[in-house]
Image 1 (cartoon, rainbow, N blue to C red):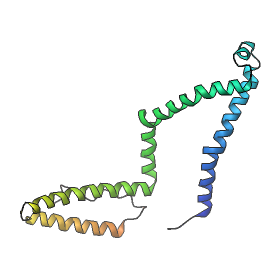
Image 2: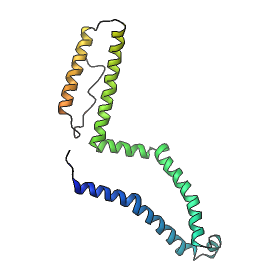
Image 3: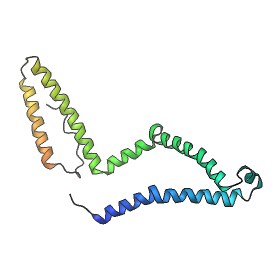
Image 4: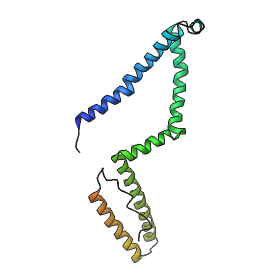
Length: 162
């Protein structure tokens, strides 16, 4: 596997920046700006939040649970995360290959179970079933020879193939 160190470092930098550095400083900045530019300038708000620490504690006690609920809705209840996952599979050749391989393995497992049931019941395989097995072997062999992470590929196993 070819490793491109500068792009890997760039990815790690962006991840560290967006997840940790920017997040923490954005929260501090938002709290500071809203308190010192808004709360201090309005007497009725200054009565509710007499100190910066009280303001931070109040916003955190309301904001953290609210943001947890919003995150939950994003992942579990809205189509937003599913769309992100779809785009990830469409654009990431590694994820796409894992999906194709897992679909292939499901089809093969199903076919193997059918054959095992037939054999365990003492039945002989028909010529059509033997041809089907041979076709699957050939398809798998070809697939493994030419498959790369860049290959878009499609499911090679289809129960209806004769």
